[in-house]
Amino acid sequence: MSELPTYAGEKVITGYEVGNLNFAATLMCLGKKVLGAKPNPKHPHLSIFIFEQDDEIKGLHKPYTNGALLVEPRLFTENVRTLKDISNNLSA
Image 1: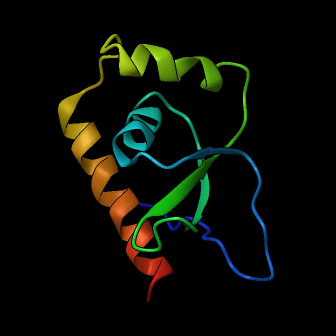
Image 2: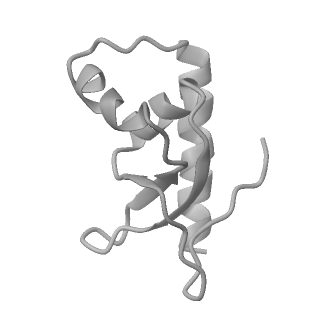
């Protein structure tokens, strides 16, 4: 697993923001690139994951909510672990 940049007070990463861990893991399964993460201001124990903006990414939320996106289960689990590691590093 590669080291991913995280949010820092002096550095702001911009892109498509996702506060749902499972949706973020699904996006990773679909090949979307995570740029970093930042603390969720409304829920400090959670993170917002920032993805590279592209034309397709905004249109993936509705199929995700409708259960129309299928991903490989093992890769999904690995991506959840990676995102949790990123999130845990924010509070360290």
